[in-house]
Figure 1: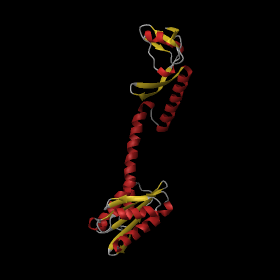
Figure 2: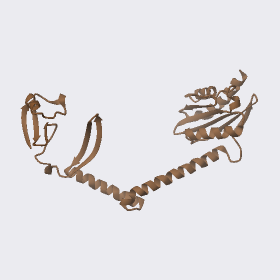
Figure 3: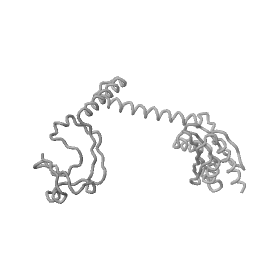
Figure 4: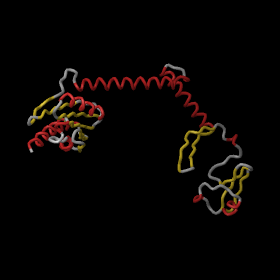
Length: 251
């Protein structure tokens, strides 16, 4: 390997690779490995690769089309990284009570078991929320239309929608309002049976609920959703939904 200081034009005539076009001065340092590469110096160099010692790539990412950035640790830094990785593997092996070579299989088994338990918990939550006794929730008749409300903390949006579908199918004819609070946010789903979507559009009810929650609401005539960021307004949101139904029917 040879290194030389040359004018930029001379380096170009030699066909040196230039990776950082706008960062070179009029005189440049050219590094040449005969039969392999000739390029402008982009940083530190060593006389021979043996001086680098251990070499471990820790990052490989794309910066642009055809350009990648590799980051690595070398020498004692690589040894320290390998030592740290070894200690982490030993701790994981002890925690999982499994040999290191089976850690991936054990992880996948636990992930699958966790998913199964989550599905079972979600199913139980829905059963408790919908009521196995046939009690659909608080029910009120407004202008001849049955309005059912239910407040169930801790549900996700998909779970809330599933609950509204379950209660709506039980009601047969009416309006269902179900609300939940989770991680500092409130959500209410308004569901209307097919025979009432023209008289009481769920989107109009959800819009009123959204105002009461300090947020917004909207959707389709048969199913709509409202949300806000204040859990203390959830009960008020459900009351606003009932009042919205009353006003729409009275109009």
